[in-house]
Length: 147
Image (cartoon, rainbow, N blue to C red; front, side, top):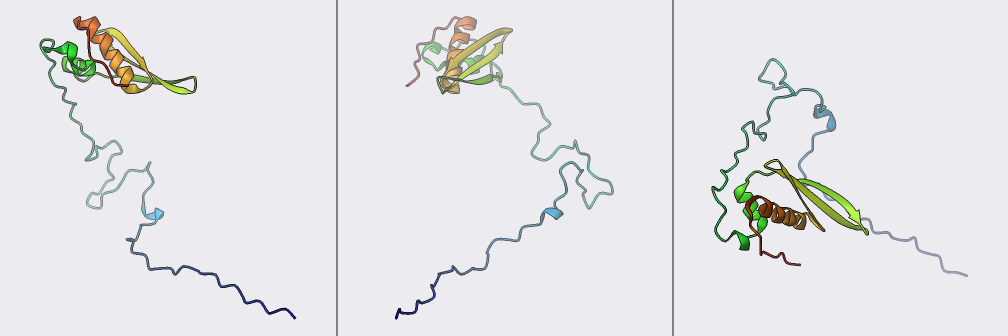
């Protein structure tokens, strides 16, 4: 005669009381496309109103350097370019070559189009700045980027 089997005991973890603060339900949050209503105001706020984290002031760009810095050939080309042309806007394009990412960075400086290509954005920007300071200011950089 076979011995009776015991019922298996599964350990179930105890549910501890939650210490999280209560989270409001989704019904309490107004939909995104409706203007928010301030209880102190009698009319809803305009949808295009400025929020506290949005600045309406124009971005302050430092004044450019009056002349090429001394020792510019030994400085990082991006640093030289930012000193001479602060507030530049770069356009970045990512493609794939041999299953590896490849980046092209372009910038329009004084009506001239400059571009740099590299395996990452930092290297592409370096090559762009190198050609830009050579073309605009005649400075041939001796700075080398690390591998």
